[in-house]
Length: 575
Image (tube, rainbow, N blue to C red; front, top):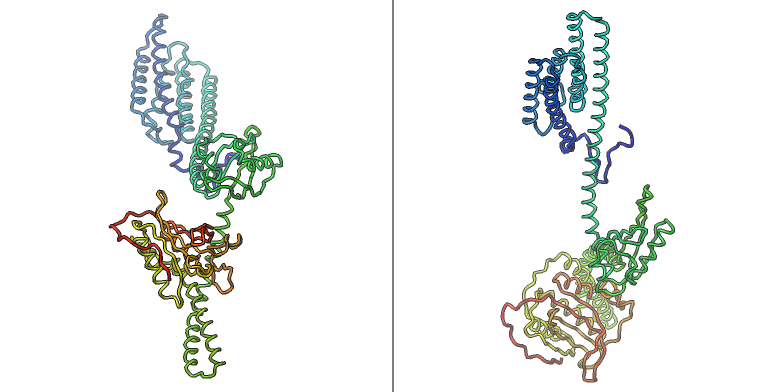
């Protein structure tokens, strides 16, 4: 097989054109088989019609030829009716006798019993062609050899009967038989070539169909947007991620729309034009309008498809990546590695730190000198600080591996309980104003996890609140379409943009003495319970009038109340 005839291969592996499962789906042998059977039946009818024409022309009736024609018609009709869907096995064997054997015998007898000058020799080409197209090379040669022997035998009989020149008779039979061999071999080669080409075409079609299905599945599930654009700036295809990145305008569009129909897509249109004009891939960050998310930066990469057909033209394949998702993915990978390392280090520090704290406590009992006692207290304070850092780091590992076990709880009741506890365990009074406005709201949240989230937010707000009794406020409420919410607000100064951008990242803090893990743990716990946490700069009413402050808002998944909750009578609470 030539190099150009190699079967098409796909990235998931080549397909074998000699696979019998592939060959079983090829229909050419079946069509040829039924075509030959129909041709034999038509030939039998033609022979009988020839006998009728002879009678009309007053030729003597040949009873033997008529009987032979009727018998051949019955044999061909029976073979056609009883024929299987596929031809017999191509190897030489007795299963070819009802077709090839009958044809060779009938045509040879017709040649022997020919009336007048009618020559039936060309009819012997029919079984030779049938064997060459449907059988093996050995079957083809055997059929041609039998036909040639029949002609040679007929020449010998004719020489004995009429005494003509034997050399010319045998030469004519030999030339005719040679023609059978040549035609049989040529047709057999062409038939084999046709069968292999059809198997190759079928395997390529199967590979293309399967690969197209796999490609469609992969492309539809890509997180990155994918657009295919032709030289006319028409979008030939785009996946669901690309539709989301292009905004609501692209959701209802059918493939084949102009990329420049929306002004928000102009950066992509310019990049596609640059790709086609320079015939080089391009990389650029563009500003697009994302669906329901406002303007955002998108990383765009373009590639040109190589086409050898000038009529088909090149296509520009454009890959879109939301930079926020890309940065979040990289940040998550870094944080995961950092968290594993920090947890391992913290676990190793925990035991020697406990030993230091215990030894320092024993030393404190024996130290009487004031200067030395101050040193002991410094050791105690820093040991306690290290202990808190270690516990915060280990909390991250616990949150990541801990499965949430949410239970239905009344939001206002649980918030009031945690706030009372937080105030009661403080070494000094902590002013706090409660505004609980969701007495019938129930949430699905683990009570201990909610306590940790709320205490972290209260501790964080306490560091930045003002000196007034209403500088720190905790509020609850219910939105009609969004469910219950919880807000922790303090009247501290606004955060810098650089701090706000990394607010919920671990190990990030604007204070040198903070681990930066509190807000990260809050976000992790909220996400594991299907809740949302966000930071906003919001005004709140105070005794001094409306004051802007920092608010952390938790949005909970709506939950029906399993029972009527108790009515809370809290409006305000001062420490």
